[in-house]
Image (cartoon, one colour):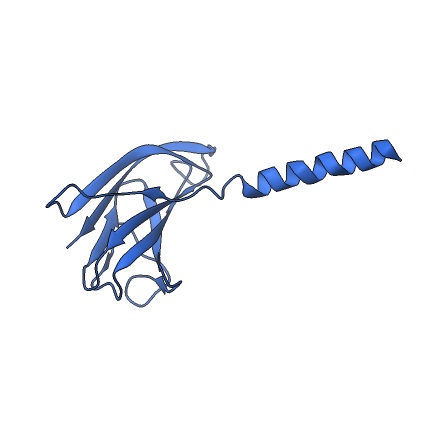
Length: 133
């Protein structure tokens, strides 16, 4: 009985660790003083990465890079924003006027292979551009 309880406890811990593994906080992006854009280079895992930017009401937001498949935004109050009235934006799409000032979380999604029939990888090096005006 102790063995069964220990096995169950270990499996529960493994499940919780794997469940929370991708719950890492968004990467903070800060623009240099007077700049309207910033670039992030790094490795993403499992096809997505989240970023956090502090932006002002009325600013436009554009996210791009050859590696991005889609991107979406969630405002501090939980409102989801996309381009052209949709749920998401395509690379270099633009949200013309942000409704609030504060932190926004930008979720970026990527293809993890170069073609539909190519093998995919769990990690990939990407470059992401952020522009706010």
